[in-house]
Image (cartoon, rainbow, N blue to C red; front, side, top):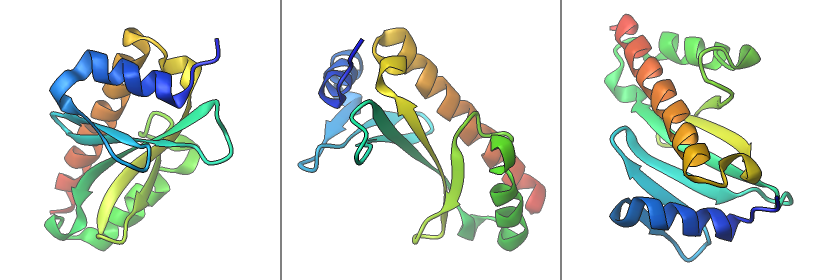
Length: 133
């Protein structure tokens, strides 16, 4: 199949209604119980999408530098991230970002699976942050 970013956006809008929001730049987000899940076009790759979620604000983690080191080490073979890469944003927050093929999330089940993966990753790393209190 040749799913496009526009196809994914239309699917997300039809499935998630008011939880869906798009912007003028062509990206969209889904409001979820674990925060907004953002979808961006993958530059130079029309067969893929970039998915990103904010996990937590490092200012709320007492031993933030130790936790940040643990989070970044989570990128080794995507340990505990279900394929996403962890990073620290300019806003001092921990993010999970992943490149996914559009054809893998071209229906309700595929999109739900994507959301589940990110929800599990967010919860896992929020729970891990409690170890650094």
